[in-house]
Length: 120
Image (cartoon, rainbow, N blue to C red):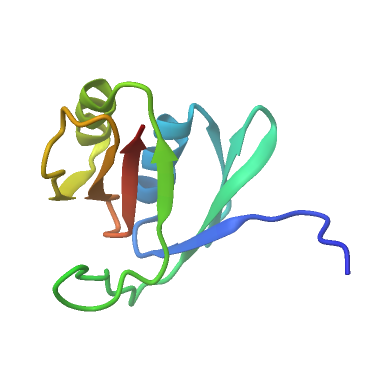
């Protein structure tokens, strides 16, 4: 079997908030339909957002499972932290020691999907 294309799809009740967040974070653009938004980076689809009016966000780590998450490796956790918060993310789990050589922090995007900013 050959996979020709791979795209991660998130469910969200608010397509615009979710697709705008990820497009800004990834440096891409949004191609929007009524019930589906594609986030493209350098002309290639990176992820898609599907309308799910009844979407219930995960409450990880203390409630509903996280369902799926992205690990994004960054050079400067301080700068990346400030940027994702300014775009609408929420910090879910801070690192025990942000000055360590490697680590991660867990955030939620506007629809509540967890993702990690990792370093090291």
